Length: 243
Length: 102
Image 1 (cartoon, rainbow over the protein chains, first blue to last red):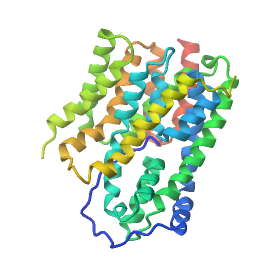
Image 2 (image 1 turned 120 degrees about the vertical axis):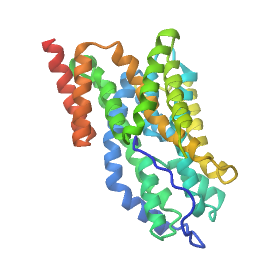
Image 3 (image 1 turned 60 degrees about the horizontal axis):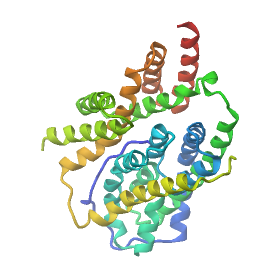
Image 4 (image 1 turned 180 degrees about the horizontal axis):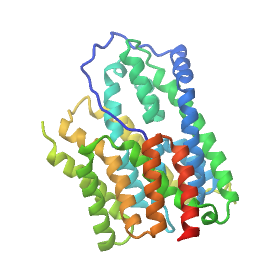
């Protein structure tokens, strides 16, 4: 669930009525199963990492079932220590997930016809992957309002089950360094970064983020440098945005 | 032991869940009422990448030569193959080999 996001808002020709049916949810579920299998691989990895960070199987699973945000969860695990730096963990999760604002907004033209329960219930299981599939479906002229929910349920089921598997497996490994698993989190972040790279225009904000993070990591204690670096990168991007 | 739930950890997870749901529902709710400028949107889009780099940079600066080289290998493999599985697999093999050699 660490994929990239593009925001496209509102100008499409929106059909009059968006449906919300079991058939629509089923269509979304089936369309998303292949994608959800990929998400499951990532879920196993999250489970292993969460376990190494000191969470129990139950805690790891609870996190996957209630947070449902892959990149944010992996990042939270990356800053998880004893004692838990609560403000940094929750703050980082929030900041990383701010892109969901754009994704939610892009659904609005279709979702405003749905009941609040249908619309606000569906977004609970919204992740990068099923959001992208849903936008494809909606833009292709099928006003299948339950597609997000159905595809999201597919993601949720695979994500949660994979977390259980990963967390159980992670508990068997008693000395992670023996298997190079202590390097795994770094490798995961490098891989996600490569996936998020959209071209040379990312270079300046990324360099600023990295520079500020290194600087503040030395000046301040704790894990605050992650928030400072991230916000500095976004700030620079906004300042140099050219419309 | 493995099925234990620490109440404090559960509270942190609940707070993470609320923080995430607010962003997911917030787009649906807020953005019909307030328009975000393209400038702010571009800032929001850069956030996940900027956060990841902020985690990685200090870690790599303080890392060993083996970590740098293995991270470089993961970078190239991820870029070339676009596969999480292959890049992580290569990364684990690389870090073990490099630690043995260096």
